[in-house]
Length: 463
Image (cartoon, rainbow, N blue to C red; front, top):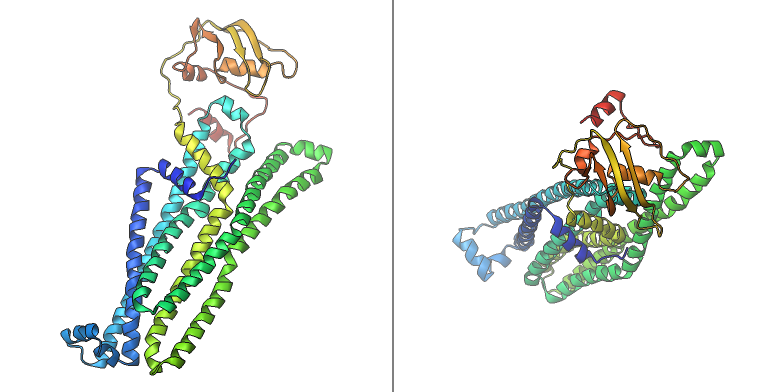
């Protein structure tokens, strides 16, 4: 399956979100802007706080701060330091509290959304017609529902929301720095962001290729697990243990190696950029301090720079990690979303009894023809027969002659393309189909045993 772009996948998910989930996303984005404003307040309170500690006269002589201090009668340096300490601490607490609140909502609502998507995926898959079920690869089905759809939380939903949140926070910080810092300081900070962007572009193709390896081998591991459990009798009698172990290992090792590769590509820039950030801070602090006429006057600016880098570096790393998570699971995301969209576009038809069908006399097949899409020849051709109620009928034929297909057709599991089934002379149609299902007891060749007690199993099928 061809990979879709991240934006395309996000747009597809947005179309199938419920009104409640859409409101939650909008509320989160709004709170992210509030968090950005709180970051600006935190940065803005650093300069007066440090200046008040180092040299309060800088602020008393400032035209704006001077008027502010005079208006509130803050002529004492100790009172002013106490006030700025309170303002700075309040800004930090407010900013952190908002971020904790957003993070809590982000995780809570994202995993609730994942549950909704998985349930919808399972529901739409379960309601597919019988022909679709027998044509589908069960390993792909299990992988799509239990792994790929649930994986959307950590591989697309949370990273996308994280990208939005941290982009807003980073933009807010940079907006504040434009006012508070000299231009060359700002350019150096922007260069750190460019470093992350360059690294992201360098590893993009590797992440995408690895995501394809992860997706294909995930299906293979589930396939081998299913086949080994279903055929355990043959494995024991034929001593096929090593064969299945080798097949499982051949899929599991590249699957886990792919995850390990992506995990490294996502985390490694952090150590490189942190080292660069520290070197930048030390170099700028030394140059500013050594070139200033009053060295102490540079400390507030350096303090803002240190706080800005201390805030921005984790944000930039998280943005890069979010991007890496999305690209590293690109193939899984595309396949899961494709299945969700198909299920949404084809809403399940609820099995309800519209027309009651009575069976008192006979079942009659009239000129029935049927062909599977994957086959060239007709499986059933011009089949006509009549079975009276109470008769015991055995259908005999060679392997592949259509015995099971004929029985499935009589039960109404296969679509009526040519011919008809008559119950007491009345044709089975979509209105009477569910009524016909209720009159059938099916004993399959492969027995389905639920992992529960006989009492619970009996009561389940009687619902």
